[in-house]
Length: 127
Image (cartoon, rainbow, N blue to C red; front, side, top):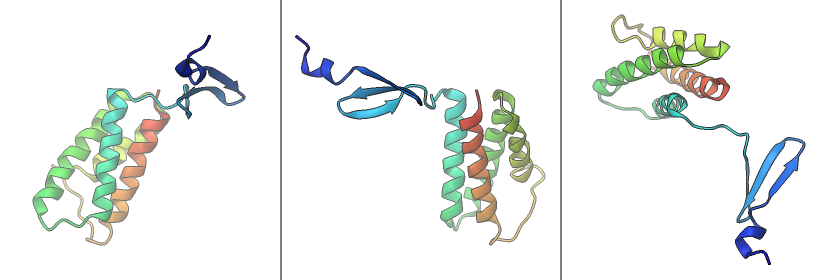
């Protein structure tokens, strides 16, 4: 006789791949797996998203963000096998702390949002 847990942990096969049903929650077993390389890109993307919507009064937050985002972009370029990794070069140049590119205060949230999108996209598309 099958236990209650066994009844909810069987595997279904559909046209889109394998789906596990565990306690009533479906998840795709062929989905996005988070390893260390992708985790760095996702965290950098989330931070750029925070920069998009938050307005900090301290310039040191933005200076530290330039270093962190540029380092994450270089890391993303060197450690991903995706044709989109060249977007990381653009992000690294944009956030370069040694030779900063200056934009108006109103344009930075747009650039931060584009960088967030680039990080998340490269993390999703990398192998």
